[in-house]
Length: 108
Image (cartoon, rainbow, N blue to C red; front, side):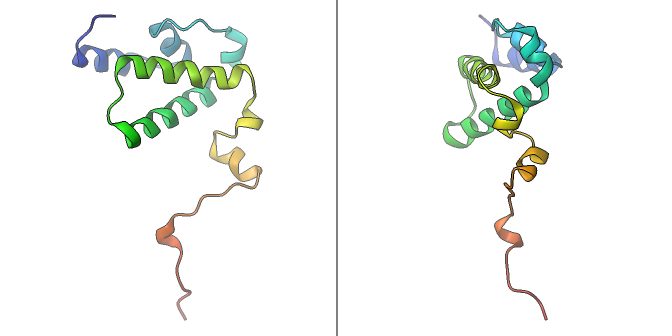
């Protein structure tokens, strides 16, 4: 795909659904998988992008595509309860995250 970085970011801003993202990056998908897991796929995608940014800077087009394909594949071979992407499912599974700044001695 030949596009400028500004055009690419504008295109991304216009995408609204998991189907929009998958279609934009020309990733073949099973509609029934996306229908059941669309929010989980998008959250996992967001998490993968955030991890990429922490480790290597701003992702390129190919990175966006590969990370979305991976997020989708996670739910082709698994399900939302197993993957526990959403906070509510993490809490239900006994996984809780506490910020380090909130840990301290009790004030008496």
